[in-house]
Image 1 (cartoon, protein in one colour):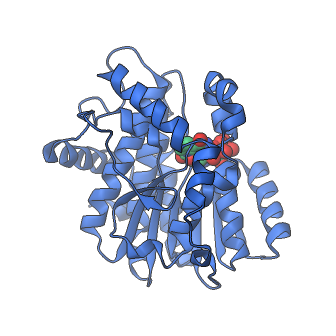
Image 2 (cartoon, helix red, strand yellow):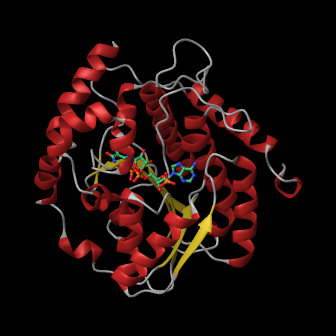
Length: 323
Ligand SMILES: NC(=O)c1ccc[n+]([C@@H]2O[C@H](COP(=O)([O-])OP(=O)(O)OC[C@H]3O[C@@H](n4cnc5c(N)ncnc54)[C@H](OP(=O)(O)O)[C@@H]3O)[C@@H](O)[C@H]2O)c1
């Protein structure tokens, strides 16, 4: 089954996820969708110092929005901030230092942010593919801590501020790589069997898709979406997937092309005409499963995912946030 899924996925990717795939899709984009002025609206982007996150932050700053760059490295964050201010002419660019693999720090950050700011759109973009099984100081597997637990806590903690705003949105940057994985709720931190970083990453991205669907049902005041950027030439792809990068480097999308659907989901009035909870690629909702791939999860497994994440997240919550 895994050979079938990987083969079908790679053939699909060659057609759709490359630069050529983007250019073909972009012929059908509506140019007017991004003619917006979002002055006064606040956007938080995790992993905003690089790649798709930085391209998204710049595009939003150019449209007048206040951008909150959530980054783990002060030097890289300040460099991105200066670049965004000088290219956009928008001074409303704020750096917040936060390691998305540190659950306690995320709770604390969100609690403080809530008292000082409003938030219209949360863009969960930070992500990693760590190819060896490594644990964080809290004993969490690193990919899971960053891609799933971090996204879960930040989103849950910020829901109350988002719910206060009109046209509140959450955009999750997942990956088409999740199409090759069925949710495995019995081993969320890859404790059993041989560790495979690509598989761990794809599981995390599958989890992000399921979280988006579930949150859309539970929080109707907020518009949730999840997306695949395609295959874009970014530092993460170069460092985490060197063989893939070597083979594909001439066919990869630019960072701006990878960011296009994140920007459209975050800014355009057109995107929220689609129902909440969908998975997007090149400004269109697409299936979350490959044909005949048997990757659908049971409602019981999806509920178990939510329960396990909630239980784990509460272990790290400050007293004021405990249920
Ligand atoms: N590029 C693609 O082809 C592709 C395809 C599918 C999905 N994606 C997704 O797109 C998103 C952005 O990735 P990218 O390709 O643009 O790569 P990138 O340029 O390397 O950006 C990743 C960002 O995430 C940040 N990050 C990673 N771990 C973090 C942590 N623990 N705390 C805070 N920030 C952290 C990185 O910060 P540092 O600079 O400090 O490392 C960086 O800013 C990711 O979620 C990725 O999975 C990308």
